[in-house]
Image (cartoon, rainbow, N blue to C red; front, side):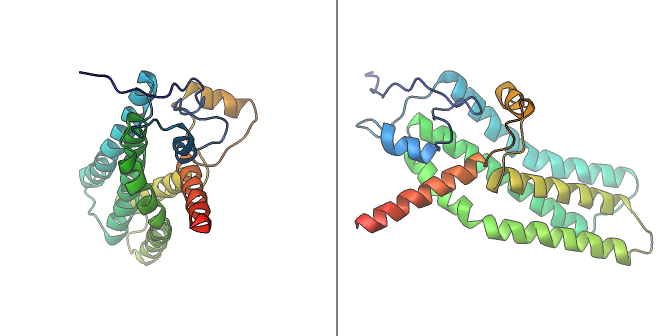
Length: 218
């Protein structure tokens, strides 16, 4: 079977190890580095890391809520409205992370359509997810205020899940918070170079920029 030809990409972002320079996004790169068949040659280590990322997020979307419910149940607690809203917010953002990383993986494997399909939909979900996280925080506070039993296991679990959801929201839509899973990231943070814009946020901005340029040309 004939192997498709790909452009050779030698420079890799130290943070993700997928091809890009400095703060250039997958979208911007793809606009410049596609071959005649629209495909980009991935690095094995890049693909392996991205596959681990999306599978980890997808697994956590199930594992985290189930673990929280089991812990609440094990101490005799019952799931409440605050608990379920927090579960929804946390799981939804983890699913968004899984969809994003899988789309990036498919993009560098040559299935650009998958990335182009999901990125605008993930961007459109931002305001809804912010509202959902905010609602979760409000319901937790209300439940704690109105609870005759004080701080219950369900309220504690809901508060933790809400905090995790808020961190996931920031990590994907605003600023990259996660650094512990990548040595290059961790060294960069320890060197005092600070936080930088989230990968998905950069890709969303790049896609909107390319869309704006295309509209002006049309």
